[in-house]
Image (cartoon, one colour):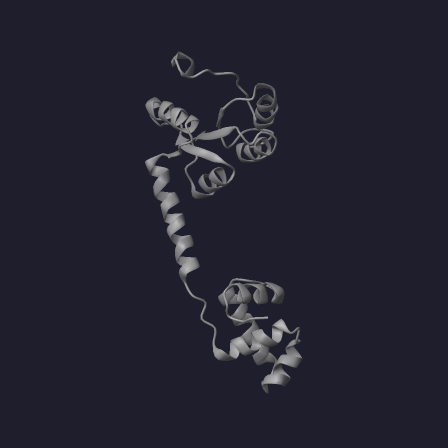
Length: 193
């Protein structure tokens, strides 16, 4: 089907991800149509590996998978277009021509999921972290390397209360350890070192 188009030349075919990696090195295509689930090496890993050695190659994901996990991993791995295999062939031609010019194309059914994900990420980033005055005090002591016992003693609270404040700080900042909490608090301007 692609070979019949005057401005598209098919330079090779690969039946799995490893062969796609090998052929990318041999054939240096401008664009690779990549499925995501293949034997040996999946399409996501194949795109990542190819990008390392051949950053100029562009990818179009052509797959049957439209769940969020595949969509975002495909885009994160470098796909410039994401089409489902049941898309009209005119959409595939349009995607190839567009990607060759530096454009991106995401099928409407997939685009809705992408927009929903970006909206969610935006909401998360815009939500200010609201720590209580006591949590800021605890965070300040954590930044100085104080232990739970030292925090409790310095603030005249029980050690279990100090642990509760620390866990609340972790939850609000979306972290799991003290160093991450201090780093995030500094980035967000909650504390200054």
